[in-house]
View (cartoon, rainbow, N blue to C red):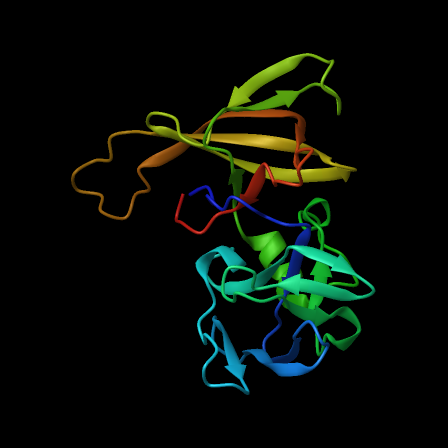
Length: 228
């Protein structure tokens, strides 16, 4: 699990479905172009004005599951206009929530860790099939006995630990808390004649609650974009 190091995660994400062609608006609510995602992994910009930047800044999108650009960060919103691409442009750019096409949807961070019948199949498949780990690099995350900060701490789990890593199974979500099963994998010596053996094995499992979104909206857990 490689933590994401974005400073501003905004208020949530717009999931960009395959085949999407989503209109982009300027401050005058005029269409300036589109964000598109074809059948490949990456979203791209197609703008009416060739003098505008045509690349999505790395701090304007979120990767999840093998590094696909499938989410745009929403930095602000109001009246169905969602501010995006704040690091890509020197002017405000918006997506009209009512104008989302196909299976593109807006998702808050405390809503993205559980499958939902209203989500597109691709998003549910990513939620169910991508490893989840600690997304915080400055301190460890408390695994607690109950969904509050006054209860017992079962264990404090770091994103980086020597010769081990932790993935989570989401059991249920309650507000900004998730009941999880933590799975700890520890590195061990693989026999020299076994080139297909994984160098990590499951060594510990615990069930408890983790605060999945902090008071600033930062997701304390996130989906892996690496093998571990």
